[in-house]
Image (cartoon, rainbow, N blue to C red):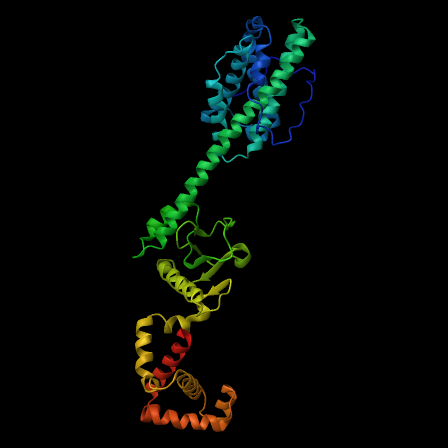
Length: 418
């Protein structure tokens, strides 16, 4: 609808409001405007009330002129809410004249609701605060011009100006409350949706793609074709961890006993981003195998915690695939170790260690005594002596390629698990 002001704004300048130390609207003093309006004569209400519609048009016109976000037709729910807000503000102030006991329930609810609407429509908080300030100044000019034409004393108009400015602060505070409350609810809802999505993606058997897409849309997560899961473990020297500021493409569960992340790729600067945490990055897999990536990420972390893998801030499962494979089933690898290395069982721990190291060096080299001696840091003659002893213990099995493979796996596993 088109708005035409019946009363043009006068050039009477209101006193400049002091600049608040905090953002406009936060922590504004509650009740000051009510007290100021109540200090004015009640018989002013019937004088100003006939001009309510004209004042409404003046305020709306000025807001639309100065605040681009509101420069659109005041139609539909948007227009209804804005017009209602302006009318409610004017009506509240008129009802408050000479009446400190006026009910505040309606206008408090209206301006909190306006703050919620601002958030839901995606506008920044400062837009509605600017609109209130512009509307307040327009209202003051209108009141000043009308008051002067009626011959109202200057001291009365000064109190009116102060009341307008105080009222702007109070309704700004209410809208800030509504905005922040809506923001907090949305953040809580989005966080829950993202945790639910993470749980769904990591579930086994793999969920239907349609289910993932549906929840991902609500959670604001772009579904990748491949993902990596990351297992987290607080560092032992950390007693209080600040939640990290993670990119939007990272799904996170930091509240469970086994915290984890999921993303298309590890975020850049992972160690700095997750300061205070140790991270194990699983292998990259198709989305449907996300649980598998997390399983190996957690296995990597477990081996690091046990000291089998180095306690680095960030570990990548891809760098330790051989170790992960060998220790995938520790019962079976222990059985293989005990069976293949049975000939060494009758020796002392020291003898068993030396012969095991020598046998592994032999399996990993060309078998020449000088090369093995260099690897072991001993004299070649010592190597020859040890190899004769190994041949006595293992016999013809050393000539079997399959048995040599089993021996090497058993010896490597023994090194890791010792």
